[in-house]
Length: 98
Length: 348
Image 1: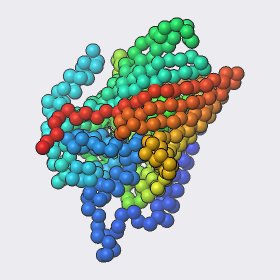
Image 2: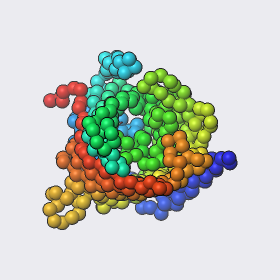
Image 3: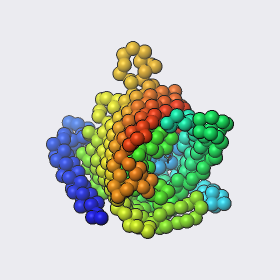
Image 4: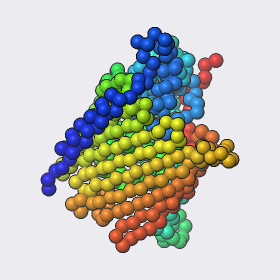
């Protein structure tokens, strides 16, 4: 039986990357650019709030509260699950456990 | 026995546990206490007129070692009780115990998180993300769930995951793994290799991803999936869809849910209510089998869930499955509860 998998997979992925780059090129900047002198850069806690809003409902209803003594552990766990960056983890911690 | 060994490893790790307050999070006050989380629930299921009772509990243990290393494990206990004569007689059955994962994660940097141990096979949306009892909006697994998750849903060996590209507009994430064959009781896995990659647009709240797996035990089989998730801003809508294909068949599912938070009357009641629907279609290839149907199968399901606070949820759903000469109804009724208990007192 002819194996059809690898070629469509590469094609699908190339299409997704092309689509994403296309969308990215047409989108306004998400985070206030440092180059604009009038817009102050966001604080780590504000960036964390944005990371929370953008990411924490992707897979499940975000919890209303996380016990403070467990915030670091849970966010570490979610960084692995959601494949978040170190910077996103730091920002989230500044937002959730300032 | 295996579980005891795992627990001992866990205790050893706990004893090595160093409090990393402050160190991992620059100047934040995040606590790194060990945690027990997870969910329990009870589902009354009727399939084609045959009832079954399914109590479940799946505790997750999280043991951090500082702020860069995490040991995580989840054990699933699911009871399955049916009436002795199908639709009459007393309920009999047993409780099945499965270790879903027991892995050590090293959060080295943004680009690479090396993982070792028993992990959930990262294929498509369901196994890693949507399967836990408290997360799943409909309790029945998709028809094509076993594509990419054979034979046990878990792999044993190394895994790498992380962020490949991060910009203000999009992130590209990846996972790559190799699993050895294991016959060890409760830690069984097939020899497989594969990966998953997705691109997420935070501005659109949309993610597109693909997964690939090569099954290396006995017959070598390729499986692939393409998926998308979308939570449009300013609406309580959540859409997810996936297409899966392997030597044994191909199928798709599309699921949508919405909290009824914008209903103007009795809003405090309706904003806790969620409606959910899923449509699925599966076509067997080469005779199907290996966990997927051998005949063309369609299924439609709709449900209403009601959140009592953050943790408790009442669940209900009705579905109908269509396959040649055998159409039947599926009912689910029950509750789920999510818990999160830090194993340390809060610092004053």
